[in-house]
Image (tube, rainbow, N blue to C red; front, top):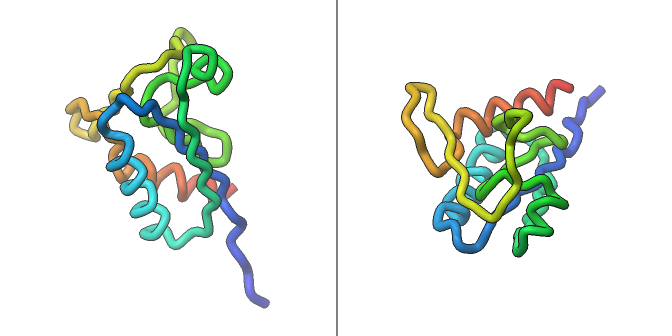
Length: 112
């Protein structure tokens, strides 16, 4: 019997004025390929403060895999048209989500 991996639903949200979104989307595709998973990636351009509230958008880029943010937010997170910062495992700040963070979230989603 062949077991098929379910399709992982991914939302990629971005703000046009944030310069890191194109590279972050490429990194997301790289992680999906490396994990060998089937994914349905929806790209959402957040264009207004109202959109930011509606999508609960903490900044660009934001990646949600199976409905979960790859980098969980604090309860006091504000939603706005802004760039987002991530942390490398060694603590350095980066505007791009680390590949390892994306891969870990993909792996978790596939195990669910």
